[in-house]
Image (tube, rainbow, N blue to C red):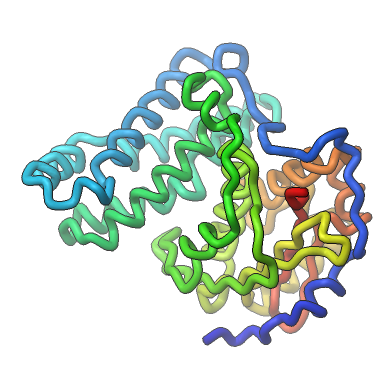
Length: 336
């Protein structure tokens, strides 16, 4: 199906060191990069966050599979489509991000605006536009439902005081098996940037990947960020994901691959040749967005490393560019 040669388990294990110790006293369970709305954002900004969160919760309820067949579901959905602000709020968040950058506000504040407007939320916008233009289809409702659930968790993981009650639930023990992630994404199509991204997953691991919703939200955030990256730069709109445990079974190695155009590979190679890391904040190929810095931050937190440069130098994160194939990997601690 894909023009990228399939990776074997041996190929995956050869990408980085076999042993990657953690400096965290306990296994990382997510939540290392949140902000407080009251302390870090203005009243108007907090209002945008709450409107976004409220409308996503409403959409989550309206797309609940268990409500299928209710007489008023279609009526309520049409009312929501006529009155919601989902797409305008995305635009407003990106304007806020640009203003925060202009005002030299902390990188984490800028990144929060960006992450709230992109990833799963960008896909929600795409699907709502499809529903609005072509009518309500079961496939779209199902996709919107899990996208809303994912983004609501991501919002709570980024903004600690957005919904304290639900955040408490996100912090309680709830083990998530890899099978649920594979079921959600294997052979699925994600719509981003008006493009369809075909996702293929190969896993050499069977077990659990997260111990609570808060941790899964951080993994989801990485996934959507890389899917968005693929949507912007893939030459064939296909994203391959490979997963395998390291030989000591203490870490999962996640490998994301997509084809890129020759000119994009040259641009990336020029950035690397200049001495910059593609994981540095602010390093992008088009001067916008946040590049891969958000991913590097998550892995640095997960392992208690000094900074993203140590994470890359020691192989916790990495990138290869070969024959117009972009390969990125990161690690996450397994559940003992």
